[in-house]
Length: 98
Image 1: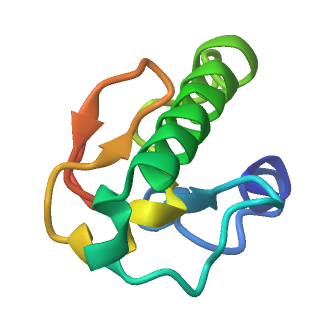
Image 2 (image 1 turned 180 degrees about the horizontal axis):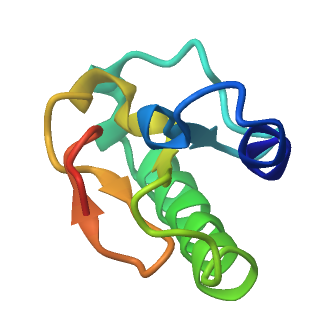
């Protein structure tokens, strides 16, 4: 997508950031944040965090750092915190420049 925008020069590519919210198909998306402290949920959250870390470190590490952000679904209620991972694995705010 970004290559097409750059090729066609239709938009300023610097104005775009791709946000990815990740979880696996077994995570119960209807859980409330209060339930995230239950032992079986904590184990699954740690598992999803491991999957996200693997995704970013192995498959996304060569993406432009300023253009992509990744987050685990269970962190949805903390959007204003520095929970977003860059392709280099750093935790940043959602729209921070680096």
